[in-house]
Image: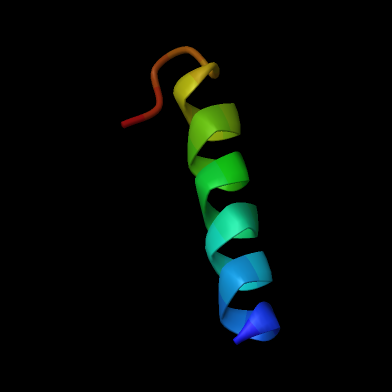
Length: 25
């Protein structure tokens, strides 16, 4: 369960980072 939680947190972190980049959908 911890692995799934960590993977989800990492995914959200990546998405949040990508959203800060200009011209990236």
